[in-house]
Length: 206
Image 1 (tube, helix red, strand yellow):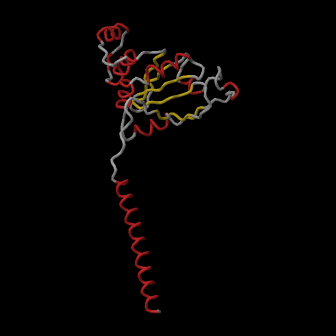
Image 2 (cartoon, one colour):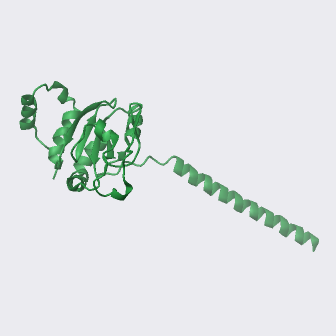
């Protein structure tokens, strides 16, 4: 009887050991598959928004220009820009490939650090979160006075220029390709820009 008991104990121990080993092996295989799983691609047709601080950090290893959407919560054209233009697949894919995209609430309360200087909104009123509020210090620094405004920065986060107003996909395409290609550096007169405007052939769908 004792012999049978010892056998069952050994069998039980072996069974438990095998079960544990199988579980460990399963976990290791699962971890291995996860570890070697290819990185997920960016979502097609959706802009990958980041903060200005994140964009500047990303520029250190993968230089790209920055496009900043300066908006307010109460601004109707800002909402149209979001819905009709930034959700356009051609616009989103082009921006993701060639720019870092930043959203900035011109009357928000977030702290912003740019070029070693921190900006805030000391007069922000939380009760007016969805109404006209105090302008953020960074908004004034960028000299933005109307919304929406898209501000462009170069690969070193240096300010290029603002573009104000609601733009349809093909209208924004003109500026995206102008700054991405650095053709703006060749323009010193309004006439040169007008010529670029007339000769530009958009490819984005609307």
